[in-house]
Image (cartoon, rainbow, N blue to C red; front, side):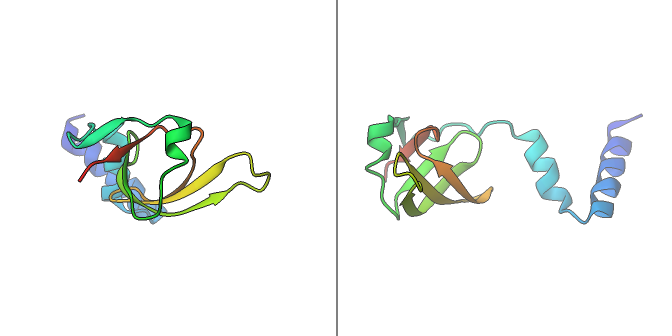
Length: 105
């Protein structure tokens, strides 16, 4: 089976499920985004606690995004950041596990 037939079959299956064919294919092909030149080192948990809404960050799986909000978890042990990623949409990430890099202006 040639590659065009495989793509056509995948698009047909995705259309039947009512999902966007482009986003599905992009998600399958992009395993990790390349680290931008203006991104700093991975933030430690203590450094991540200093993040504020409006900051731009980078995540290997979701790419670049802007922090919308930061809230404490219900037990107060950590913080959760709501981030609007350019390609992946809005995600809520636990800062103790997020592996973020701050984007420098």
